[in-house]
Length: 179
Image: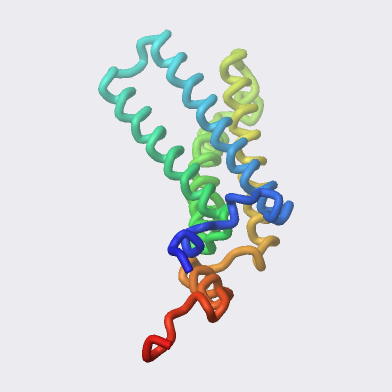
């Protein structure tokens, strides 16, 4: 037996993935794309209006790039069947991510003098930000139940490696006494 078999994961063969896992993975990619697009739009607006200090803008962009890269890497592990990655995405995107996406709109609703003030003064950029935020939320809310419904596909990494080792024929294993 070679060590290669222990490190092979299910993501190498997307055809073997349940459709719900593929749906969850694609929804996470869509959420990431919406987040990146919204970040680019906010950055363009801030630069055009000179509303931010370049150091703050750069650090914010680096933080988002790191976060989005981390989510992508975790999503790839999830697509490979890793239970820990799935759980991290469910809690991270489902709770923390959702809270961060709805906090600003809820603050705007809470501080509006009158409900009609929420719908005045819209710009094309503002409307695009709202649409991207909605797309982001919808994608996350598609991914979470899809990951949860595909529960039998996910296994802890150690259990999967143990199962793979047990599935190897006995002839590959060394026998006591050199026989």
